[in-house]
Each structure stands twice: as structure tokens, then as C-alpha cells.
Image (cartoon, rainbow, N blue to C red; front, top):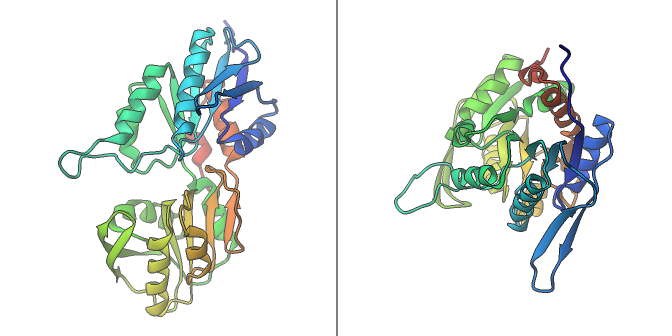
Amino acid sequence: MPVTFNTIKLFAGSGTTDLAKKIAVSYGKELGDVTLSRFSDGEFQPYYNESVRGCDVFLIQSTNQPNDNLVELLLMIDAAKRASAHYITVVVPYFGLARQDRKDKPRVAIGAKLIANLLTAAGAHRIMTMDLHAAQIQGFFDIPVDHLDASVIFVPHIKSLNLPHLTIASPDMGGSYRARTFAKYFNAEVVICDKQRKRANEIESMSIIGDVTGRDVVLIDDICDTARTLAKAAELIMEKGANSVRAVCTHPVLSGDAYRTVETSALTELIVTDTIASTKSSPKIRVLSTADLFSRAIANVNEHASISELFKID
């Protein structure tokens, strides 16, 4: 008996409209019509201007700051559930609060687990996201998680740079596995920046483990927040005799003075994706689109095809 598929509808949250439009174009389908009404006290209410009854609904929204993005997404899930959507897949290109993934000191919250609980309780049947801060966050969910890997976007771009003496670097010990994964594609050496923090977003000291003399170094990270870690690492790498240093980060949070920090740093360029919308630009920041990857993942979910097939790199 042939497999039948329900009607797919794609909707965008207000925080990720630009990326959602690109995904819809790549998929070959227009975004659904949803309105966000606001009250004078700041309360808001999303509602669908078309029927979603019996449809497979994909809701596209990153949960970066402000927290309105998360609340809006939760309300969109709840509205779709109450409107009798058949299956609700939440597409979260950037999964916020993911840095709170463990209890590393007494009396702190595990924010990533809380968000997982909220999305599930709201009525999500499936989560699709990209480059979680820690892969084990997938285990916080009791529903399927499609964890997309941005390396399939970054690796071809790094190859196109034709760097003659490529070395891959991690800006901290926690990212060493990610750096080694990238290095395998190039048969490149890995160096690690060992940093000590005074407190969040403030570095006390940093040292380089490995030799970068005469090398073209590419730093690999998942999140660029204040950019201070990358700037400090780039400065230290150049001081150790590197030819050049670039950085690759999936999620451009870029808070505070991050743009100025990047522009005044030793970085040749910072390569990011469009998982987080930005109203600013910089000659040192190159943005690669994730739209095609997300659209293909959405198609594979609808057709019950493999997601891992999307991450094969020649």
C-alpha cells in the first residue's frame, strides 16, 4: 500500500522570519500566514490565519534573546495543537539556554532541560535543531530530535579557501571533539586553547597546546557571544607565529561589543551561519546560509527518509 503524506505547512516566528523565508523558497513552498498581535503592556498572541487541521506543521523559530522568541514559539505550538494539527515539528535553528546543560555548581538550573520540557509540554512532536552546545542535550527530550550538523556547510567553504598550511584549533578544551571532527576532513593537526575564566564572558588566562608556527589556523566553535574568547585566542595564535587565523562559529549571538571586538581582533574573518538574525554587518564577518540544509531535512522528515544522509561530505 503506498505511503500517503499529509499537507505540509511552514510557519515562521517573528524572530527568524528571514531564514524561514529562505527555507520556504528552497523547499518550494510559501510560508503560512500567521499574525502576532500585541497588547499595550507587551503581552502578545500569535494566531494562524489559515487552517492547519490535519496538517504536518513546521514552526521555524530560534530561541535566542529576547525571551519573547521562546514564549512566542511555545504559544505557536499550543495554538497549532488546539487547531488540530496532525504533527508539529519545531525547527529551532539556534537552541537557546543550551549552555546551561549540566549542574556544574550547587543551586543552579539546568536550563536546556527546562526548555526541552516546555517545548514537549506545549505539544511539539519533534524537534529539529543545529549544532547543540552539547550533543547530549538530545537526551533531554522524550520526543525525536533531528540534530543537523553545520560542518556540511563549513567544510566545503574552508576547502575553497585553499589554505596551504591548515591547522584546526579549538578555543577551549570543551570544543576539542568538535575541532577533531573538522580536522579529519582535512587530515590536519589540532591545537587547543586552554582558557581559565574568572566568571561568565570574562577570561582570566589562556595558553596554546600545540604548535601553530607558520600555520593557517581555523578556530572552530558553536557559539560566538561576546567574541572575546575568539579575539584572545586569535591574538595568542598570531603571537605564537601563525600565518593567519580565522574562526568558524555556527551561531552568531554577537552580543554587546562583539562586532567591534571582531573588527579590532587579529582574525582575518569570522565565518558564521544565519541561524540567528542580525541587523548589523561587518567586513570581517561572512554569513553562510543554512536554508538549503533545513529545507532538505524538512523534506526528508516528511518522506520518512534518512537525515544522516544529508551530512555526507566528499
